[in-house]
Image: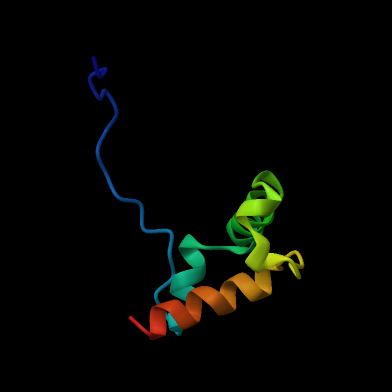
Length: 79
């Protein structure tokens, strides 16, 4: 069973909406810490899979959070 919510429902407006760019809004959800975590898990995925299943990735180099930002940006731009 799910316990009953006993808090007070509200939305706290702690986000400044003045002079924000689309990147600023994106980074509210995907900050540097989150991108590093995603990158670490991506690199870990490579290490945890048998060589026979990843022959096409034989020249693998660990990715960086900057590369992950780039990958996500390209993915979003292509729809």
